[in-house]
Each structure stands twice: as C-alpha cells, then as structure tokens.
Image (cartoon, rainbow, N blue to C red):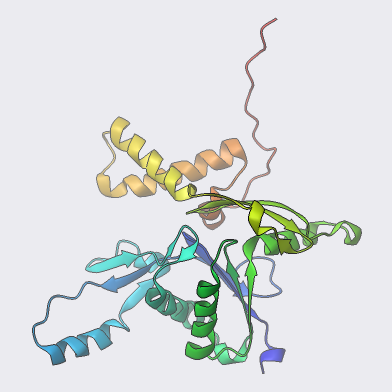
Length: 265
C-alpha cells in the first residue's frame, strides 16, 4: 500500500511547520509549530489526577488554534531549530498526520527534515516516535539545506543541476550558513547564529511599546509581525522567513530598490 500512495513530507521549523505530499509544488499546510495544552488545576486525590491526566492527553490544539487559547498554555516544542520537548512534539505530530494530512501513517512513507547541527540522539528519538508510535513503513530524515538545493532543480536545466552550494537558511528561531558538496553537508564549516525572524519580531514589538502609545499590549505582537512581513517584502524582497511564506506570496527580488545617496564629488 505504501508504494502506491505519495510519501508525506513534514518540515518542522521553530516557528512554522510545512507539510504536504511529495510531488506537489508547494506545501498543503503551513501551521505554527505550537501546541496548546490545558492548565489543569491542582487535584489532591491521586486517582482523580490520573483520570484528568488521561483526558488532558487528548485535550490539546496545534497551529493557529493553539495561539491565544483561553485557559490553555501555549508551548513551542522546537527552540532554535532543535526539538526540546519530545512529549509535546509527539502530540503535535499526531495532529499533523491525522487532522491536517488526513493520512494513515501505516500507508505512507515519510520524509522529514532536520537542522544541520542536529544530534544523533535527536535523530534516533524522532525515528523511534515515527516507527513505534505511528508505525510508518519507511522514514527518511534529510538536512533542510540539501533539500533546498534539490528544490532549485525545478528552475534549472538538466546540465545545471547540482547538489553543491552554500545555503543561507534564516527561519524563525535560528540562522545557518551551510556549505554542501555533492549532497554532503560540510559540518566543520557550518556557521550558526541564534538570531532570526522571531528576534526581529520581538525587537519591533519593543520599539512599538516605546514609541507607539495607541497599540493595545495584547495586539503588539501581531502588529509587530505584520510590520516585519510588510517591510521585508517591500524593501528586502524577502518574505520574512517562515512568516513570509505563511502570510503572503514572495515578491520579486528586484521589485523594490533602495535609493543610494549620491556620492560626493
């Protein structure tokens, strides 16, 4: 059965998760990589605590539904590109597969991504979850930078296709410069910067708090995100990292040019 159905592709990032089926030109869904779990009240009785814990395991939301959910705590299982809370990540993947992809994991191969500096322990843990919890028939875990080079083939002639290059990957939580030679990541030359889209959003939010008095505090974060996406798209020709891909189509890199000051004679 798995050979006759398209593989599922899941790209988990710090801020957003892209998912869909192999063969499509773009992801079917782009959802925030967050999960909302209920903040249970303290229970004295041990038996009642066990019952509530079992109910809470099924009472959660992911993606846009998880943001600003009353009486729920919003958690982000991925930090700076690395999965830190595996229990929440397993529940997140459960909704990704059954609610969004609407797939039976036993019937599909899975292609998943990992950051360039991912540890072998994290890779093994991800494989353990996919094989033991979801019973997938096959799993391939690829570095995001290598897949980015492969994706560039769609716009190149056959003779120009290559898996060698330098990838600048700036998402929501981390920025990497990754050299790739013939499909192999040169790990010793990777440059890692723990600054990315989310830090820019928080910086804009802080500026709004200092300079704008008419913005309600509960709306400042969304306003900062909107400003980031708008200014990135208009001036830099970029889509604001993962947020830009989610919010609007990417403009042409040459659509907006910044005027340079005239040089002095």
